[in-house]
Image (cartoon, rainbow, N blue to C red):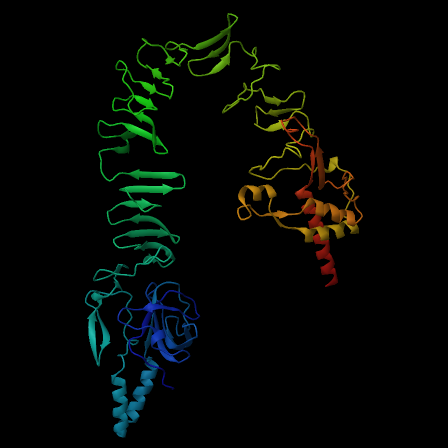
Length: 578
């Protein structure tokens, strides 16, 4: 048989699997890589031995392709009964070796040439320089402390203890007999990672700095001072940075944050110092060591030993609360005019008009009318300019109604929370000159489509199909002029759709509607074409508060279905012609 290519100490690791080519990923310690020792497309004996799957092995002849992969041309023996092994993904070794079959052939040749003298000696000298045959040894899936590895050193062979290399022991662990040193790596390619997750692991961003990455992004950093940073290079013992803000723990001090055995969250300064809350670096709220709270001051005063809320403003205004004594009831609020408002402990605050109680502020903070359903909040001639509130609540079973003047009324159902008009299909949301910018919803809108409420006309006409095909070619990306003015050309978002006037013109060109001329009021029987106008409204210093105008629009859902019908007809025609 032909003599394959030989080279000493060529052995690499591989990770991929299957029955096809295998890609070497790096030399085993003490060995060389195939790419530096073996020419491409040159046959050699190989031996593949599973490390992650020790029961899988294969020997045979093959060659390297142009990509440096081992192409397994002929299998001599394998764990699959001599067939090509379907290797499982995971760690395995690929070695350039001497096949047993070739050795047997060479041994027969040597026996036949014993009388040849010089020729036999020359062959023996050639074999003496080769690595001892290893494929005929008994297979072992793990290593042991006393194992030796034979390697070429100069003109001789030496045995190296396996314990000086990294090897897998009987417990399935990968052991190293010395400190493991690797390259610095990066967040994208950590130096210590996982076979199935190579961009997650540990790396060295700088001298004496440790980084942890997941998904190729640095998440945690420990610097040379032992400071830990999550999402940030730490300046304190612990720094956590998110888009919402930053949390830091100083390098030293007695303060602590803990959850007690009773589940109470505790913030302890650990000394006779104050809690401080800052806004943009400026003290806003402070809690003194005596438990007094200051707003606008870092040294809230202690009035008579009571727990105090001390509030100071630029005009000297002050609020003081006494919780455990009735000496001062309620609160005291002073201004330059000397106005005082307050209540005594456990008493509500009532507002009276014409010696009749009208409005009550209860001790729990509820503001209510003095009588049930008997008071109005403002009147038709004495309106409040604005009403600011977190919630509007009605009694059980009573819907909340919203009505402007004599216009239609909108309601919120007391049972379902649904927001609905009082009259069916009579009130719009927004208008041509008063549009809502965005509607957020968990699902799409429901347009009622009950056949009982429709008079059906049928499929589009040929002219309508022609218009739909042309409209499809008009679709494109655009930016709103208002967004460009606010954000610039690069900042304004790209939208996709049609220009209403272009759709209108196509429909007119196909004879389906009248053209929308400068003097003509646009009209269309097609509901996906919209045009609305409005009159001037209000009066400002320089003219109407809102000038008269008009706006073209489309109903995207109906237009999309119109275009889909044209596309379906086109596909049906193509299929019929095929």
